[in-house]
Image 1 (spheres, rainbow, N blue to C red):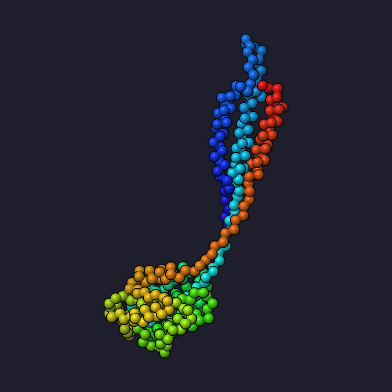
Image 2 (cartoon, helix red, strand yellow):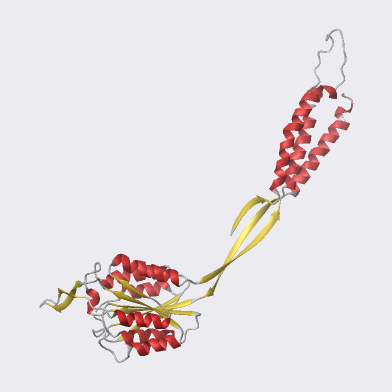
Length: 332
């Protein structure tokens, strides 16, 4: 809530331009307001009358009264503004994340999985009005977090994603199917899946095209992201006797045709992330494409402040008239 002073009719302030004119008029005509008495000398008039000296105060009071009336006509008022926002179009989003061993490839820094987690976390913080869920998949899939509006839970889930929690492989169909299952009962007006993979569907018992049909029939839009550079990258191929991963250069293989098909069939869009910067720009673009409609209502409360200026003008005029017809009545 905020408050501030405003003038509803500020055009009346132009009337202040007449005050210098009135002051000048009084200055040049002040002698006409007093009678002239010619005498041969001032001897015997040694006493100075204070009321005569402050007689110009009457005109000052009149100018102040006019100023107060001008301010009152400008209608000063205090405005208190309260705001209320209403989300009228919620979006439910499920991020289906590939956690196969190839996600440890080092063509993104420090590796594909960690780069994705950093970008996905920033994406979540930019969606304060939406519900988000997390599905991970490799050779199989499972839900890490059902769709929730608690961003703290979602961010903690993303931070805790690790390779090796489930059987290795790339079951794109199962990952997409699990994400669809999380959204099938959603009442949101817009349902979105962000499916990320860095490989080719090579495991699982759900055909990716079958999962695509399910998403399409349920009105779920799927954005697909192929993660990996063009050419070769350092992939983990084995472990040494100490359990440390051994990396070797290998050709990057991503089933872009399948990812493009999934996106096109569901009304989404396919992206290719070849480096950290590109990956971040993709999530930024998705963030712009999927906007939650928010309505903002403003309530105004006006407190009129012109009355004190009217009363002040009346008081000043009263004092001027009182002095003019009492004290100064005998003075010319």
